[in-house]
Length: 137
Image (cartoon, rainbow, N blue to C red; front, side, top):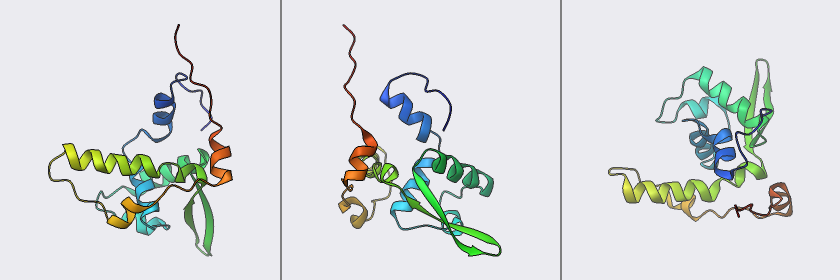
């Protein structure tokens, strides 16, 4: 994503990357094991093909996923989470907890998803490069 952030606020800059209505759903599906375009289309939310193409491209540009060909004719790709994408696991898990607590009739997420632990590899930690929080005086 090459555009300038609206501000230095970490919430705003994160929303600039994943704040549309589909990116977090695609991330969820990747954590659930989906890798291929047709698998994402089978989700109950019924994302349109043009929107899915756009989101996967934006997610790749943002460094959340990588794609690798699994078929050459016609060319088809599998998508995988990068360490940066894997860093969203606790966010998605907390969103599930919040939704189950405050939004009636939401599904209970699979236990194996809720038990997953975010990988804290050296690559993941160095990708984040923690910064000092700027406060107003």
